[in-house]
Length: 374
Image 1 (tube, rainbow, N blue to C red):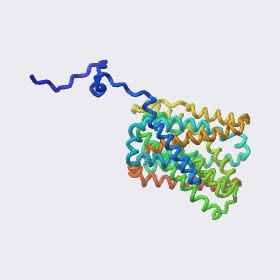
Image 2 (image 1 turned 90 degrees about the vertical axis):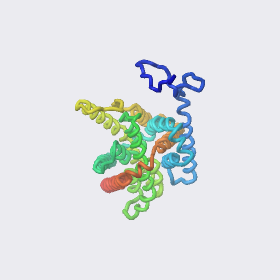
Image 3 (image 1 turned 30 degrees about the vertical axis):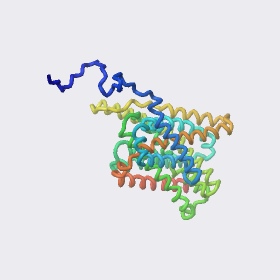
Image 4 (image 1 turned 180 degrees about the vertical axis):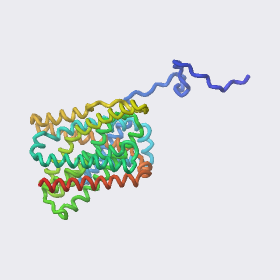
């Protein structure tokens, strides 16, 4: 008698396990719980954090956050490690890149107080706002004209205008595309580009300090208004002394303060665009409805308000600053591990052109603004 090889049609509601769902003993295989699924990737993120700390200790000029991104990219391409990064560790690394990043952004609010902003004067605040708007809209327009795919123009514009990788992750969260693999690739590519250009600023901008005729205060404000990540600002401005460093950090923190309204505006605009697409008959799939103001942005504002009260002791602020650095470093390692260099190379010419053009835009706008207000 010959056995039929035809597949038995599935019956709706039939929950009979398939052979792939059975263990060797013939019993239904149990899917690992969230702890077991996430542990390998989270452990990799912690290991990447430790390595980034080591790199920063050996090379103080390299910010820990920059080292974390680079190490994540390396881990995703090194033979023997990339299989773990892209396999069992992927879910935990994605978890670190999302949730640890948001926790770090909340703690970032403790770096800023309303008094610090007012102390710089309204002219400087207006200058920084102008630089942010010019950089954001200029970079977004250039990215669209160059034909960069997906959300890359928006994400790169945000990273250049506000605070690098942290801003990119914040806007990504506001879009509500956590399960969209194409969007995750756009995020990773944008972070790699912004991190690379911000790292180059550490070497290039100090060389322009005296040729551009800037004193210490002007140089510090130029760096604060034109360099992306907080760590990169510190590494660049400290070359001109403590006065430049202080000015750079204060100006940079004003840019960080603009993260909250920018994310809120992006969330509202995206919700309206989705509603328009739905009314126009175009399908909207693969996304969830984003919050009007993401919870972590509310947390960022709450921490800024708490810092402004002056009630927190120095020890608490120091501890929070250290925790924020660790959270962001682990998250950036996770985000860096999602970078796929062959894909980046395929769009390399356009991506590199946008990075260079945006760098010129932000540096020029910051330079002009500093000359006008000092």
